[in-house]
View 1 (cartoon, rainbow, N blue to C red):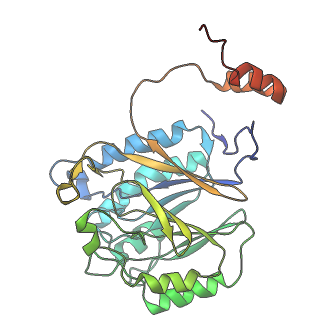
View 2 (tube, rainbow, N blue to C red; view 1 turned 30 degrees about the vertical axis):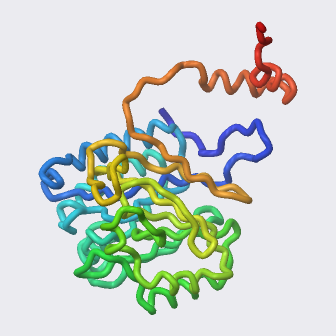
View 3 (cartoon, one colour; view 1 turned 180 degrees about the vertical axis):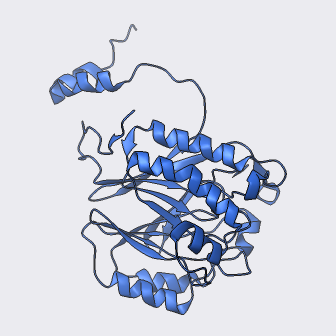
Length: 308
């Protein structure tokens, strides 16, 4: 299947999305594909997720991975990640954006994923996605699992944001600036969040993409929507009390991000083999497109007569 541009047909008040991003997170690969925690096949789960991404049949404007690309920062794990993802990105003709997480090691990530010198410098970057600016921040702290942003990175961010982008800006980082009802994440949160709030105040930042939590959630930070994608490796079983939440090999998903002129939506795409119905199709959409708006309402919106 040849991927098509991500814009969709519009039958309502909103025109098609201006940009579409696939947001994935927390792949946690290990060298030699060792099972994560002795139980999770991270490469198999990633492969299934990537098949689901390609099954969308679209050409996204970017694939964004928000951190914990590997579990131990091993060079072989980064090479395995590139081997799995690069061919998909090439087929979709989509740029790859890698974000550092607390399980990553900056030197190995910089060398294996970005072709840069293997230093402890933060892994940051700026991408122009057809007028939509995406800024990758590095909230990892070498030697620790909590998150932080140092003064130099915040100065750099303020400098980049001093000029607005045509379609606004998205930030991509690992540790979300949101509370979690799961106690363990409070210890590993992004520290000193007020400094980030000051850096983005009054700028064109329209959204924040994050990971780290291994479950999908959303909220607002400094008036900016925050969307957290669940992990591809394993997810947190939230159907338990907060102090008893643990991982499970189920519920994997990624986010489909649609950027419109006046809003941004974040849709959770489950990675599952569940059967679906066959009512809606490309042919159905084409048939609706041939009708007038009034005819479409008559065809699809009107309820059948009630037999009282």
